[in-house]
Structures are given as C-alpha cells and as structure tokens.
Length: 103
Image (cartoon, rainbow, N blue to C red; front, side, top):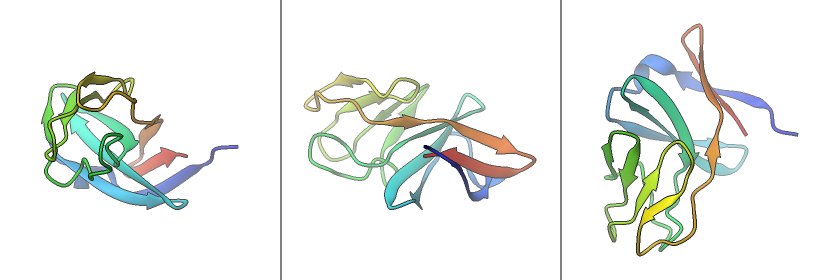
C-alpha cells in the first residue's frame, strides 16, 4: 500500500522548476506548472535520463534534455518520441507547506 512521504517544503519548488527526491528507493520528481504541483518518475523511459535535471517544462509537459521525448505531467503519457512508454505519476500535495508524495 502506498503511503504519504514528506520530502521537503512546497515553497522550494518554483514555477517551471522540477526537483528530484528519493522516495522509498524510487527517483521521483516534483514540478510546479501553472501553480499546480506534479509528481512523476524522474527517469525517462527512453534512455533513463533524469527529467528534472535539464528537462524543459512547458505548461503541463516536460521534455527530456537527452533526446527530446515529451511527457504529460498529469497522465505520464509519452506525447513525443523517441520514448513510447509513459512515466509513472504520483499523487502530490502541499500539506500546510510540507511537500508530500504518495508512493
């Protein structure tokens, strides 16, 4: 069963930024886009590059800097290749300033 894990402070995630956390041994990133928080696997399904380090956020998508794959931050769907597999997405919350991920 997934549990909520506090990983930091929600205010540390700026608009258009993403930060990665180790959550129960998984690399999970949190991004802020259009004021909302999104949690997702930090590992591109194409060549396993980290999405949070250099990935470009545009609205609710993130583009991997390695080969240009684009993922939907809401659903995890691979919108543009070369990646064809989605990334995992996770519930995330700002709980009185604490950044929490359910994983």
